[in-house]
Length: 506
Image (cartoon, rainbow, N blue to C red; front, side):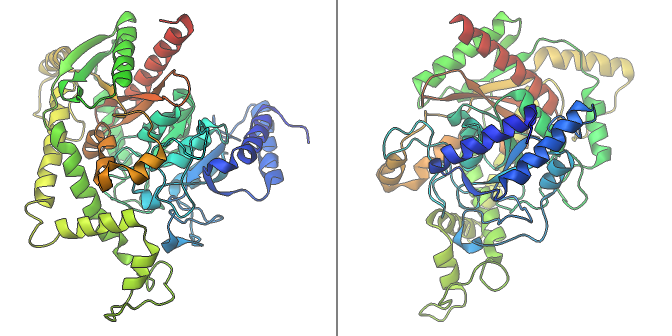
C-alpha cells in the first residue's frame, strides 16, 4: 500500500500505540489497522485532488471512554458499564466522521470522569511517559488517557470532557494543549453525564492550531442537546463580538487571588517569564481582582457531586448498568450490592456527598449557597472583562453612546486572563494512594485554578511551557463567554512567544 503524508502519520500513530501500550492510555483500539490505513489513504487522495472533507480529513482522533461510540464499548472506566455498547454515537463523534477524521480508539479516564489523576479506573491507572520505575507520575485527570495518547504520538488529537478542569489539567501535566470551549458551543448529546451544568467536550492536541481545527469540526448547534446554544444565539454572540476594536494587542488580566502561597515556585517563575515575553511583544499586563475565587473550589465540590448523585441514580442493574451476582444485601435492599460493588470508591464518595447536600436538612446550607457563589464567580468575571457577557441583557444605547461606552470598557477592562493551570508539578501516583494523611479531598486542590472558568462557563485553554522531563507546566488563558476565537488567538500568541524564548534561551 502506497501511503501519502496522512497515511504515513497514521502508520506512525499505530506503531506508537503498540510501543506505548504499557502506559495504559487506551482501553480499546481498532482491531483492523489495515482498514484505518485505507481510510487515511482515501483522505490522502482527497487532499491531493483539492477536495478534502475538512482540515482534519484522515487524521486519527482518540475518544475519551465516556463519549458514546456505536462500534466500540463505552465503559466510563467503570465495572457498572463494562461491556456496554451504545446504540448510537455521540454528536461529536458523528461530526468528526463527517469531517473525514478516523477514530483511533477509546481512552482511559477516572471512573465517570471523577478524579484528577486518571487512576480511579477499572482498567488500571494511566502512567506517565516519563515513568522510570514501577512508580509513575500522574498525567492528570480525568482525561489523562486522551492527553497521554496525544503526548506520545498515538493520535493526531483527542476528545476529552472538562467538568472542572479535566481537559486542562492533563494537558498541563503532559505538555500538550487542552481547550475547553464555552459551555453549550459543543454538543453533549451522547456524552455520559457527570454534572450537566458543567460538562463540556474539549480538545487535546499538540498545538493550538490542531486544537482549533478539531474544535471547528465539532462545534455546532444540536437540537437533541437542550444545553446546546442555538444558531440564532450564536449569530447574536458573533454580532456582539464584532463590535469590539481590532487592536491586535491584548490587555491581560492577572488575578491577585491566584497568587497562592501553595503555588509551586517553578510554576510561578514560568508564569512570570511568560508574561514578560508577552509584554515584549506589545501586550499589556494589568492586576485584577476576582474575590469570589477563594470560595469557587468549595462551591464546585458541592454542585458537581450533587448533580452526579442525581445522574448516577439510574445505574441500579435494573434500568441501566451491570447487575451484581447477588443484588440484595443483608437488609434485603434491591440493587444496594450492585451499586456498592460496581461503583469505585471515588464515585461512591461523591454520590454520598451529593446526596447529603441535596437532602432536606442540608440543601439550604450547601447546595443553595453554592449556587449563589457560582453566580458571584460569574459576576466577578463580567466585571473585569472589557466585553460584556453577550447573553446578558444590557441597557439600550444609541449608536454614538454605544461606541463611546464600548471604548471606555475596553480601556478599563481586560481581554483575557492568564493564570497557571495547576498548583503543583505532577505528583507520584504512590503519594496519592498512600499520602495525604488518608484525606482524599486534598487531591481536590489541583482544580483550584481551573474550576472558576467551569463555574462561569467560560472558554479556557492550557498552553504548555517548554520544559524538560516530567516537570511539566501549563499556563491557562480564559476569555469572556462566547469569545472562543480570542482565547485561541491569544493561545497561539503565547505559544509563539514561549517557543521563541525556548529557541533563544531567554
